[in-house]
Length: 111
Length: 112
Image (tube, rainbow over all chains, first blue to last red; front, side):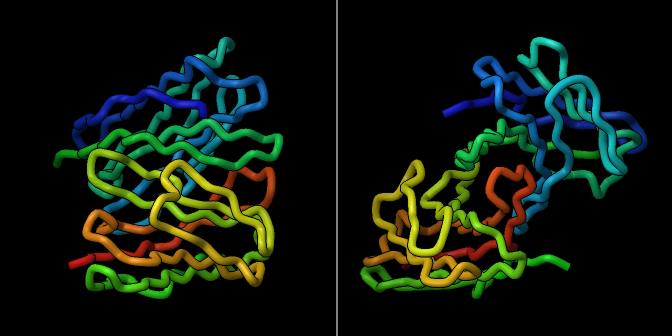
């Protein structure tokens, strides 16, 4: 079962760019890297996924180096509503769908 | 808007009761999952299902069973509820091989 490592918590001021890094020391060749966001008393919500290099959508950017041993979720100009727990996962695209959610990174945005 | 609906938002049950948690998805997804979430432990997979009548144990299946008689519905059963099963229970679903999982809002179960 692939496991990831990410910081337990981070604080940031409103308007700053936030980068959350995840370690993928045992990532398999077939795995994609996916990030989810969870607000209190809600289920996790998909943010972004990628395999290599950089991916950007309307919410975030995801940077994955060539060796794929890490990934960095970048949130531009955070607001108070970005306060949440962020999870990085490795998803097997060959068919096995047993997700491993660790404890995630609790991001607190400060006014 | 696509949805995963969990039947109850909050539930209080007594020790020893049989408890049913229901999950329904309207996206024709093949895969469905049950997780529990506890402070400091993240999300832990209880059971998942690839298809109707199929089920696979996750990381913590003890004390739980599941049922999937129809594609859209996945039930989690606590045969005899215990206080250590007090938790937030989350249902999720997705298409086979697709990374985009959709989660329900969760059921907060308290066993007294």
